[in-house]
Length: 494
Image (cartoon, rainbow, N blue to C red; front, side, top):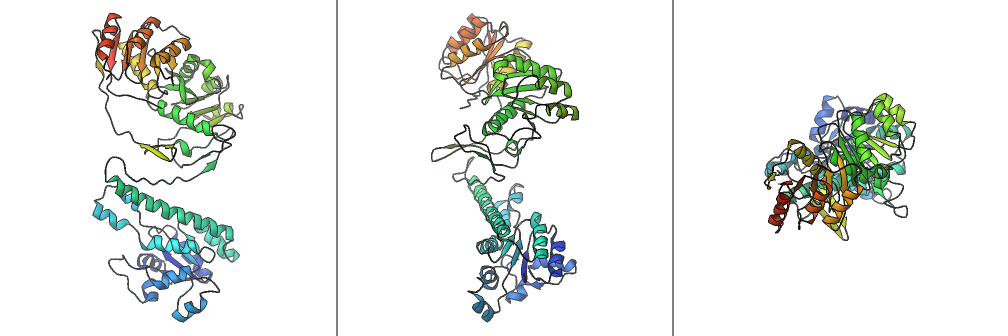
């Protein structure tokens, strides 16, 4: 290694890296800002403008965009040596660079004219040149890889696998950088961009997809996608789906809450004064469905709660934290996956369809709860309605949820008929439905669902409203002495 070119925005570890390069006899080319840092560290280098014979210009917009730089990055050993020598061009063996922080500055809401100044031109051009020529040039775009440079110096060079790894990382970075710029500019056109570019990292192959004959992987570094088990079996495709559904529902509750999920649907939800009691109540809503499902809890799991969870077969537990005794208890179930509940990552909701994607975001919205019947709900009924409504938002459509003030009582989900969803919820209920509240994720097109709920014992109902037969449904509720609330917001989940 004879020559290294250094041009970085992020100066982390720069001086230490360069001292290591110089100690091994590597000559340094550096741009103005990088050179200033090296000069402050007492390190000798050759200024790029001095090497090219062309000064930095236009407030630094043009400094590395020069044939002597790109020829040095693109030279092929044994092919271009003669022309390089005739033009006095140094072969560059190592490029260390990183880019203007466009993503960070875009998040700060800068005016477009100011933000455009944070689009790097020379950096991506050098990265692409070096990465293309990876057999002859090592390209390092992340300070986390500086120790790899030190190791290569000590052993006399980079291995082929290291060079390929670095070039993959380099092209991924320029792709992500261009995507961030494109997405930001296209987002100026409206609430959703007409062109949307995605890059997700941290891909991990899973044992299989939804079924053993399918292949699957998970990608992502934050939120549910970034989580890995503290103990237990390798995560499955379906585990991640269920965990995402459970976490979304759990975040609806500020009070102590436990959520049981099976096949991407809630099968038991309960609140309580203690976590163990809330878990038992949620499990007992539908113990057959909870068996082999996943459990999400929104408080630190203690040993007593862990013991109770271990009394049955649970695939996965997720909670904000665990006591040492709880983790020790879970180790007795060595296959059970135990994970930490992360902060939500946010962003767009993306689903694939044949030939493309569906993109969705949920802007801040406000429901307008309005009593539309002659009778107002009582305080316990209102509490039950709020619980049922939260759960209904996370059950697959069509969805009907019965609840009391502390737990769900029956859940009918994923039906093509709303009245069938109500019948299934009633059929699955293990506790009396007298005095219960019921939620529907979309409006009731006919009174039949409300009438089924009333026959089962429900005394209050919440729904979005908006049907052409709303008046007919309201009249049925008044006739049955049911309190009914319209929210004005539908919560389909397909």
